[in-house]
Image (cartoon, rainbow, N blue to C red; front, side):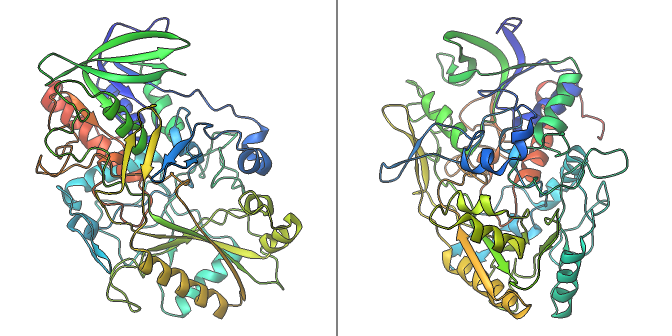
Length: 514
């Protein structure tokens, strides 16, 4: 921690998409920012693209264990690096639908309405897309909300195998569209359109993750300090309990307290909840931000996700970058059901070793044969907020995730329908794998924002109702999970919160558009 100041304008815990976007925006305006990351920088090396290293050896994922609701320990698929989980994300950067903000009626209940509407966030979505370098084409998604302008970059295009599917899907009345993705694939860009993107880190820095697009540009301003391999034990308040005064950190056995005017928790929905719960004191016995609502750690969501491999045993699929197609025809009420089912999008090209990492009983030679002949999909449905799905910290300090999936019938109907559709298109063998509690990439909802302190942890600008200078800017704030990837929405809300801090707290005016 050599060179770290005793005090900053802003201290941010976590260097993922939320913390990275906050640092990026605040630093541009001249705020002095400290970003604390418990991990290190992920090295760019050959193993970044190795199926064995990434999926079998789990070289890059955390070794820590959490507990499920029964007390059984599991190792989550979460990553502690500069850039957070975005180092391994699939690069999908979709906006939430306008209807998501209103609350949607599902077969098993209603999603929680947001305290803001899509129109409130739309200008910040536009900034977020520019920050992330999104590629796509507006106007083709039948559920697309209104936009103030085009995508920053054009769609990446489909390879022949995926274009053939695109034509077939349109031929049966569906409306596939180019999946918005954040990769550096344009003139002068670094992307080589490889098959090791989704689920892998990028060894050439061509994935537009939070490190590349948010944190490094923030550091370049000279207004940000970044400390690595530093664990945050707790946030400390003043005697009145109305203001955070310091953050207690530990690095290589050395503990110290760092002061700031504003503190931002951006450690991810699970670790942020754990941090605020660990910070309990006499004024906040249930954890920071929990006094008014008892909602801290509750309403955990992670999506209902299924990976699908549709196999044509007679034709090899020679596609390289498969994640270019998306279907939202079933996102809202649809021709199949009078309620939402979810989103279908291309999955990064599966390889045999990726499948046997979780299905060790299957011969790798067989799974490789399937993978050479498959088209692969990621099927995503909303799971609904429930106060019983929650994150807590056990007495020994270990995180417990008590989670029971819901809205499964709708998800199952979407998987069943897509299976039937794939078979009708010449893929008679369909293999599916439902993601379980260990897959924490889309974690959200543990400190939701709202308009009522009795039912939410945060106000509409992500400030804790119970404290004057504590903000939570990561997927914790989401009151509903929706059925699309959360990264872009986290960045958009971070830009909105940063603007609020600059105008209303630091009084320095709004940023110029990116």
